[in-house]
Length: 327
Image 1 (tube, rainbow, N blue to C red):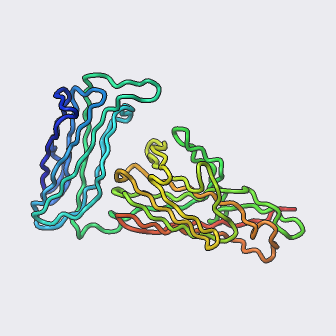
Image 2: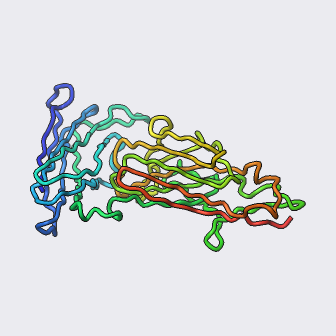
Image 3: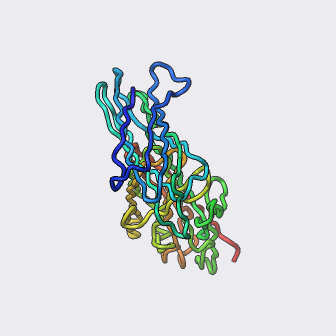
């Protein structure tokens, strides 16, 4: 396996800023390993500078490989005006074939708050590209990791790190919602509404399709900025990286009659190892719960999410036990 790197002309025909790309050696690799390190340096960059870094990966071996899964080695606090983006997704490269992958590097001109990038800036970073032989690409490598949980409605994601407290209490493996029962009928529940949270983690994910099935006792209703909210979350820093926009990044349908929510998400760059997609659904008690007879009530709320991505599929489930409070 070897990489061939190349440059494109600088924006607007200028010849001031520049970058260099070096294919580095990966330590402790054996003769059959298929990893690449790209060391990239931006020199004398200026506001408005952008460059397209492309490289070709050639499979010089005798076995097909899958990849890459890019892992960015960036400083802990990169400047706000620097953007590095890509649309890389893992693909199979057969012996003798090659694939070209590209990164965009941009220096923003204007930012909110009047922050201006400096002239003549130099920035260095590394990208580690991981490949595996096709017969080693098992579910644990390609498949997404999924979780489903329930939280109170007062989750605050605007802070950094995000406030992800507020899990519903649990008992015996079930989340708990307390129901106030008067004259043997359900008067209200505490909390009156809650969020179901689907966590989706997996390197290389760009497309996500979710089918979330739920019990008829709760309906999906309006939450903050819409019924469905989706975010990209930095697992290491605990901060929200991006709120995905409805109609642009996220499309969804809600069918409370048949108890199904469908969510489709398209990411402009593949998910890295320290990122997760969070999908929030707000559930509120329906008329079939409030006012119903406690004796005839189904005391359990089952919720299951079936997730399909471009790198694999899986499911995650969670259940709520409705517990009677004293009248």
